Image (cartoon, rainbow, N blue to C red; front, side, top):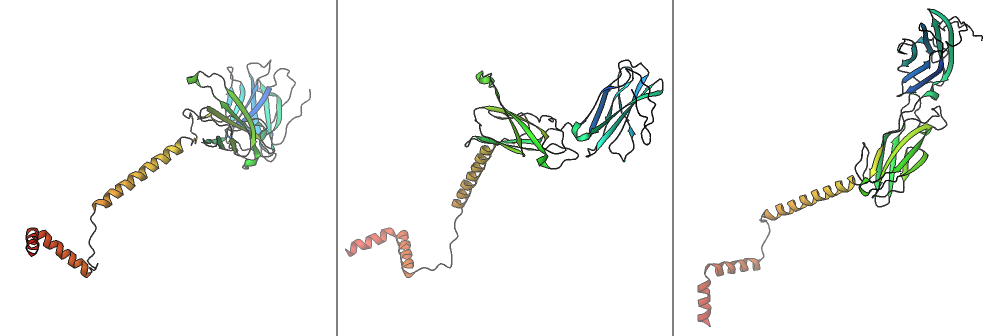
Length: 304
């Protein structure tokens, strides 16, 4: 088996056919936006002093960079490498693994990889559920997963799994599951029943962009409907009525208090309010009747 000798900016290596020492199952995965792990299996006949060295570069213009954080097996042989601050670009990355035995480079392994294809997408973010009991539907919303190279929301499509969970209180053990593939960042669930309890999880994949074609990680399970939520979600079926009732009670208390306060405060007499002659006459007669009621009655009787 012929192998070409690497030159230029590549790590220098001699290539001798040594069956069974070459690496197997070389795999790289990007996760949590900017972390990358590359792993491989040592050769089937590799001796204890066989060692593996990984180099890589993200574009043709760059020089190869050696691994700084190796993963080792029980014999101290390198079986992988951990990278940080990895940025995905549209170009293909170049990986190279040199194999050495007794301190001598004996062969190499090369592989070109489009980094976006090996990214494990993070879960969709901020999954919220807002339900309306009257119309029997729930609006489910979320944000796209984080990536280092894609900013357009339209580059993702999503798989939603909505499950009608079993009710242990009623000894209901059966569950029903509904799966939907949607684009955009919201979905209207129109089969909501307030008496039932549901759960939802979401994951993302590519939608005709430079995004990993593999499905990403599932979001944290969100439960809604009958019972309490088990994660941080915006479930407004019961929260909004409670807030409205509390506000109404507060307003009623304020109105009653204001009415009582206004009833106990005497209204000042307007000194500029003029009295008619009839008002003065009536007021004068009332004073006389109050002060000398008996004399007035006696005088009336004598005149009769």
